[in-house]
Amino acid sequence: MEDRRAFFRALAAPVIADDGEVRKLRPPYARDDSLFHSRCTACESKACIGVCEEGILAVDEEGAPAVSFGTRGCMFCEACALACPEGVLVSEGPERIAARFRIDRSACLAHHGSICFSCKEPCLEDAILFRGMFEPVIDPERCTGCGWCMGRCPTDAIGWEPIPQRL
Image: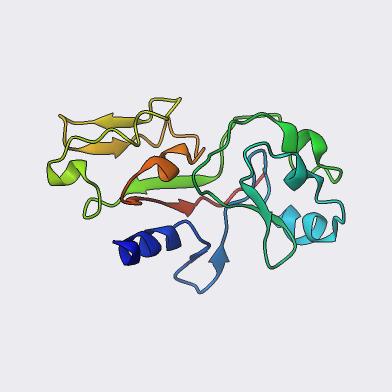
């Protein structure tokens, strides 16, 4: 079971795209990923990381903040945006993390006939819908990418892929 958990935890790590580029989840309120390559890596304070009450922000190998989901998710409290001295995180606009979440049917308990609503319960946007009792799906229009569902899934069946952000 631990090997399976490690495999699905790897889904929450940076994603390697088909072109070989490593893609990461940037903090909420990030509107332009290119700003991270110039402003965030030069920022010495990393104030956004220290103010995150949920503890989901960490410095990546490039020196920029990245979301690292574990057992917690984003509450969209705006603290990271308000603390950003470089203006990279802007609290205007939709509250969402630029990621598309998905459920791995082969690992999901519900898809195998067990009654499980672990992912649905913490979803504040009601983005996890059930077709019957045994077929959960994530509605991409409702999902904010907060990540609360990931930490609650007992089989780590929920993963993500980044959505590029541009102004």
